[in-house]
Amino acid sequence: MEELISQLIDSGYLKTPAIIEAFKKIDRRDFVPEELKGFAYVNEPLMIGEGQTISQPLTVAFMLELLELAPGQNILDIGTGSGWQAALLAKIVGLAGKVISIERIKSLSDRAKKSLLKFHFNNIELIVGDGSQGCPKGAPYDRVVAAASAQEIPQPWKDQIKIGGIIVAPVGESLVKLTKLGETEFKTERFPGFVFVPLIKDGKKS
Image 1 (cartoon, rainbow, N blue to C red):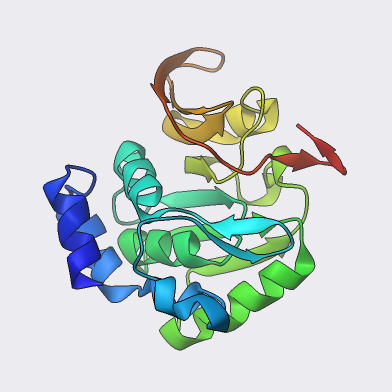
Image 2: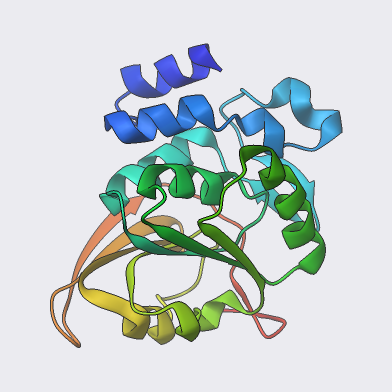
């Protein structure tokens, strides 16, 4: 794990002390299927079942840095998957913050819940549902982050983010960072070269 973190720091993907500390405290190995634990520190995505993956550490580090995270923030995490990213987020925002993580596949959400038990977080809420619709009950959010690729950023996410808030999500084969400047005004930044599983909406690719 130390070697992986050093590589991410040396290559410029991990920069912020709080994110580096989260990577040290939240062991990726705890979220990888038993048969793949020997590959937990390889800088690659790994299959976790149901056609889904635990994201490449480099990608997770890059996304967390783009989010400009701070203690006390209210976060919406779209696509719980293994639960690793939700755990990293919960560690960074701290006890004054909140992470709502939504996953459409119940078996993955249940498995993530078991993996998270070790860390005794009381600032994570796992929900089974259609992440493309966000989660109105927890809105407005300071940050929204997604681990599945859509053709465009879903409107519900834009509606549920605070003014001044940030959305980081894959669109096609790019990561997009949206900063909400006003009720309908966003600053858009694109970072190409990323591949994610597709965002599923009501049984169809979004």
